[in-house]
Length: 100
Image 1: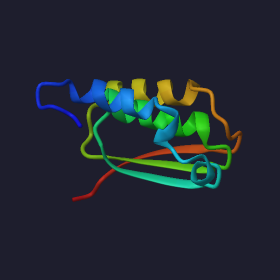
Image 2 (image 1 turned 135 degrees about the vertical axis):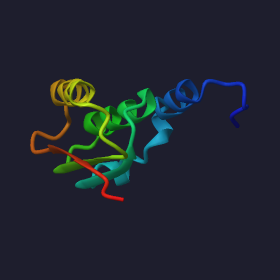
Image 3 (image 1 turned 120 degrees about the vertical axis):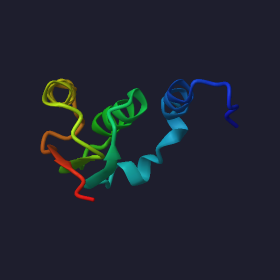
Image 4 (image 1 turned 30 degrees about the vertical axis):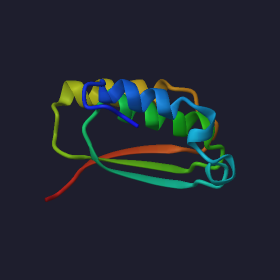
């Protein structure tokens, strides 16, 4: 349970950091991920890093941004994610902007 006064990002990150957050049987078979409405929050970045670290079969991570946040910010996020260690040596990272 999350109270309204809690920091949402912090609460989400604590929950995702628990071993029971991701089912190991499912995460081991995960190959393609598409994340819509990406805003670049700490909890979103943490979730992507969690998938990178724990999904050995991951082949493609497609991140669709809600809006263009700016070249510099987008570049910083992509650099951070490209440098992060991955369980799968085959995973490719793609960024695009939602078209609506």
